[in-house]
Image (cartoon, rainbow, N blue to C red; front, top):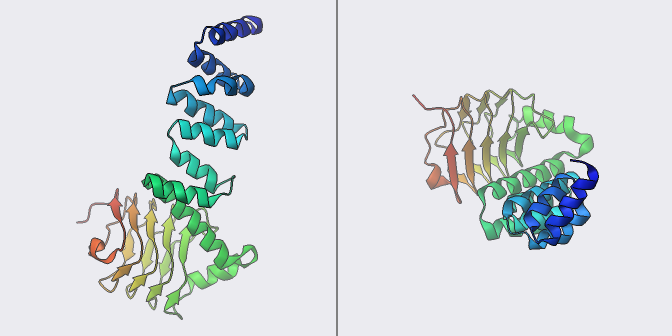
Length: 249
């Protein structure tokens, strides 16, 4: 179909109030001006989602947020507010209202990143890594955060024999080489316990000494891990999600 005929078809759809067909063409051709003029007349959430993705890819983030909202994709709205739009308060409010588990995970990751950056600072990563990897001289750490997004995805094992308390997060996320975490004397985690998609993790040595997780326990997708048989519901203040891990013998 030639460009002139394309334009004629678009105009015909538009004038005949076949707005969804016209919108589909405008979105496909990234004609944002024409699409924006008729999207309020489009009822299909699928088209609003397509428009939102196109706007996001083009850097039109404000328009993307509005379109994601119409498409009822609030997790994407949360993601944008926590990301390039840098408006975390709006994201947190949405998570509270929608009670979305995916949105809550995005909030957890955002908070963990903020905690990590507060702990390390750009120039202090090596010092923080040394403190993380050699903590046996102290019974308390502010946070333990290990994962592929945090400059320490090469940590294969954590041996924490003297650790009794983590004031904030115990966060192990998508670490491709992490195999073993040992904290047999750990008694309290002040905030989240988050162990997500560490495919090589086979040992998570927590014992009955652990009596409090101050927020949420989330242990998911660690396909080689037999999760310790603790009273997770009893020791966790908020929600407990444990799934997608190995079957214990």
